[in-house]
Length: 298
Image (tube, rainbow, N blue to C red; front, top):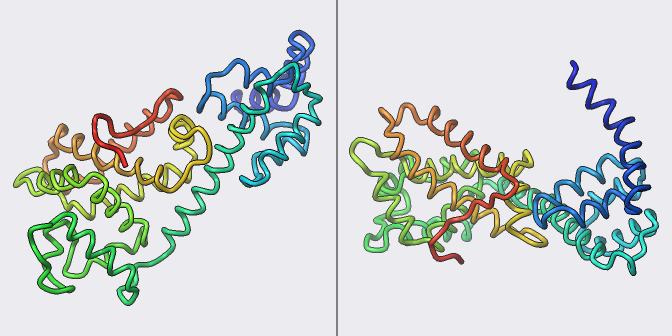
């Protein structure tokens, strides 16, 4: 109750007067102080996003909703609204523009990921089938599929003889993620597949991969990936950046699983949640960028 009351009083009363006092002392508005005093990346962009969202000015509040093409015009509108002299603060325009591109790009990326997730796997779709076969060829280059419907799919971690039923939760997003990792980190993907067949600590590679797609998606949807993407991409984040984060999850989960040495696969949900909490904790570090280190990057 006290925390809620303090938050309400701060955002609706104290914050206004604090900003006013600081402007009188520094001659700069809050946005200028953030751009000039915060490290480039998530520290700066998250503060800008927060400031704009709480602004009493409609021009500033709307700035977090503009599209990529409108960013430059929006920045000029903000500078006019806040009476910012570009001659006196030469770096402000560029800094704010980068922040707005990141904010806008994150929202667009989420929509792209969500749209792909909503596309169900269709065995009558030639492109879908092509990607599924590509996944097999990338993971099992020395073994041909005997048929489209076959128990061989279990060798790469699907549950039955037709993988299409395993993509229901994440749709085509799950398959695209699996293919991306297998294509851009082929040796690592095959090594992890081999480790997943461990007699005691083994797990279903493809099923776990789709499960990690859900984890990456939920982190993106909740906004938890902002710190990572704002640090990683100095501009407009794209789908490949989401795929690269997924690759990080797959690689790190495999290490985590074998370090934890679960009693059996029946405890998967417990360890999956434990790994999820670990990743969320890492994402709270605004200096953090979760990428695969010392491995070739696409």
